[in-house]
Length: 213
Ligand code: URA
Image (cartoon, helix red, strand yellow):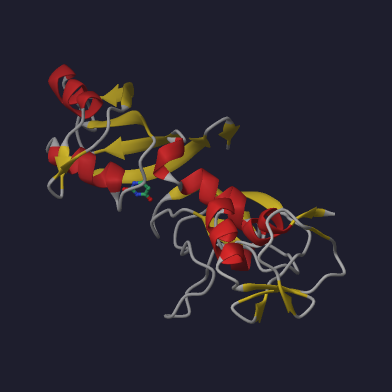
């Protein structure tokens, strides 16, 4: 048996705090009866509804996937392209936690645990994500410093990042840069690299917090 607000949060409908609000607003029913009291315990056999819609209380599952290129990070693609969910055999309704671009490879978490997913992507938790980018040039010390300090993209400065030049090949004029950020802005790494004058040729995510490829 678990507390009602926890069960609602686990179902992915809302955060724990929002679930408490839903309960106090009289929007939650247990076995057909509105419950406004906080903290009642419910089990597998109870039917829980939020705004008259039954929530799922199924077992939680977690997958770490090494995403290949050419796959979209969504549960269902409107254009019918292959998704990260298609790559995993699972009878539960799982979805990706956060996003990687179509051409980005590497670590992505999939789960049906909404509260866990919210915790991973919520900016206040500052979860580190480490990427390795192959770029069409070699970063100077000044470029590295700029990226480390934060750089303005789309009018907003990025938070400080960890940046390491891993490998530089003068012959092919390419290099590999490791960048750790805790934000998750759209195409963030590509835009950061663009803003110092280079292009990302390949991008791979190698780590999310302590989880590695
Ligand atoms: N930054 C990007 O530019 N692309 C990704 O897929 C992830 C981070």
